[in-house]
Length: 116
Image (tube, rainbow, N blue to C red; front, side, top):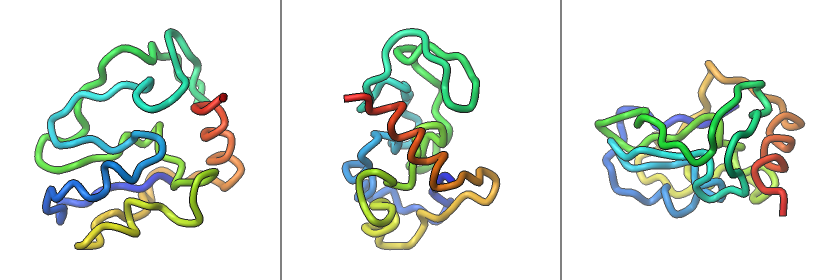
C-alpha cells in the first residue's frame, strides 16, 4: 500500500529528500510523474491510467507535505523499510489503508518508474 502523511505533519521536510521515487512534495507544490523517475511523455501507469509524465499535477495537500500515491512504492526495491516513516520525528508517515498493494505490485511499480 502507499504511505500517506497525516495532518499531524509539522512540515519539517525530513521525509522529502529520503524518497527514492521523488513522491513526496511540500504543501501546495505541483508534482509530476517524471520527477525523479525515468518516465517521460505519454505513459500508461500500472493502474491502467494514461498520463503525460511531464504534465504538472495539482497538489494533493495545501497544508502539509504529501505523497503522490501513484509514485509511492514503500521504498520497495531501494530500502528495507519506508524511509519517510523511518525519519519522521512525529510518526505521521503511515500506511494508507485505502490503497492496498502487494509486494509484487510495488516491485512492478518501482521497475516501471526506474527502467535504468
